[in-house]
Amino acid sequence: MTLQQLEYLLAVHQHQNFLKAADACFVTQPTLSMQIQKLEEEFEIKIFDRRKQPITATPAGLEIIEHARNVVNAAHELSSLVESQKGKMRGNFALALFLRWLLTCYLCLCLLLQKITRE
Image 1: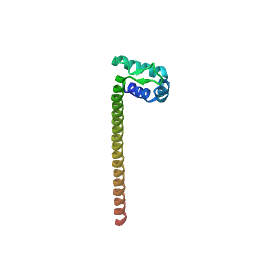
Image 2: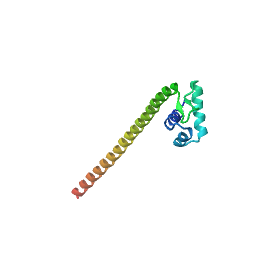
Image 3: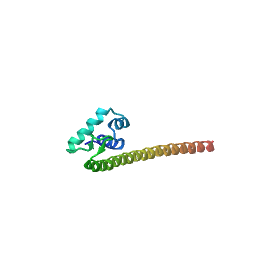
Image 4: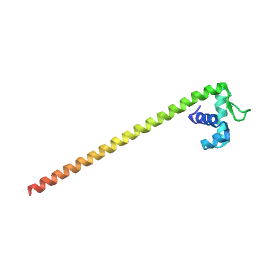
């Protein structure tokens, strides 16, 4: 099971159509269908009833979809957290560089003023 497969699963559930879900995921319909099929084989359970149009989730599929939604949301939250922490580190580093530059400028100005006042 991969995060990508779970995202495809959620897209099929949302669009109730494999072609529309594939378009929304920017993949071909055979690619999406194959990944859903692999997931169903791994779970040994049918997630979608393909005999009906629009496609609907089986009762067991609805439970899987709910858990998949939680996993995908948690993964996105984790990615956001990591990115925000990277941003803080970049921000702290940039601030440190600026403060060092500012301190250097201040010291140079002080030395220049001392030299001018001595002359």
